[in-house]
Image (cartoon, rainbow, N blue to C red; front, top):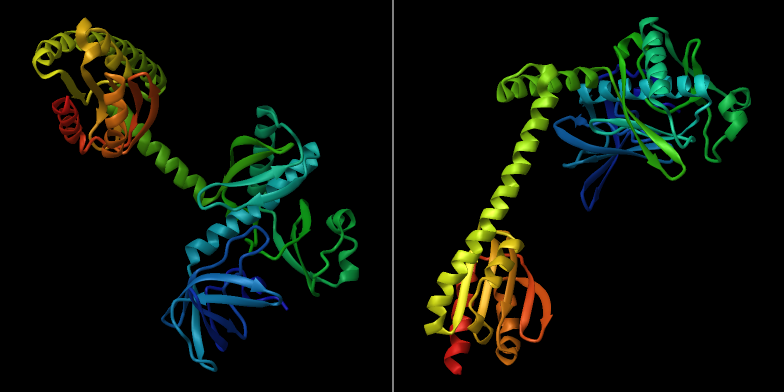
Length: 397
């Protein structure tokens, strides 16, 4: 038996009787005598809404029954008003009917069969049994789909027996599912296609407004084609237009110049980054000399710089005085919160003794040999404690 939501996809409310209510781990499972809620299936997500004052967060099919997962208990035998999230339902209707149309046109024009599909939260896709589809083919398919929408083709629901269903091309090709129950529900887009389907659909293609094909993605011998239908296209246009306005203001140029402006900015950034890198290397050498003078008295060097990188560290190390090979040297670069790179070097026995404690302090990992340890720290929040560890090792000498 078809549910009320399948008999009338536009039904927003229905008074239903609570047949059973069972407490489960994540709430309650409720069975109604009939339901306005579509249970997840056929690639289409479920409906959400309320039964009385109780929220329905999930609806699944278990055999011939729809199981409503609620956040509160309901009394068996009560007759309650059930109401769905209509915006969510109508969006699913547009995407699902759009998928039927898209799959039919892909098959009719190029013989590309839809093997699977997914109605995503923001973008949907069909999976095709072809390794590639050209931009020209994508454009032709999109144009024909929108032509069919403008022609306002009716979408009709049929209920067939197994015997009647055997005349369907889909059934001739794939056969009927083993667990199929009569009557068999078939969705027909007049003059376009006729297919078995349990989902909710629009009554006329004009309600789809338009379809937009986006991009493709290769997958296990086939290809995915991503698409938007109806209100999702309008939302995409609104978001895109808002971004265009912001970019026009930020870049101080017209829409047609956005790409060129960004390319120029990227080029300038690369030049600046290269210059900054060179400045940091020179700064590393200069700071190494300063620390070398101090280390002649302390016998160690501890240095942390937030705006630097590994090139800076090596430049710093290369700039140290010759006698630094006898000192304990710790140089690090990165951010206090997210960590970064470090190098610890010095007399082999001392480094072996303190390296594990230092690595633990900065939540790091790495490795080394012969008195040099190099690695990555996950945090430099306790980096000052490293100097205390080094001082302790020096004082023990």
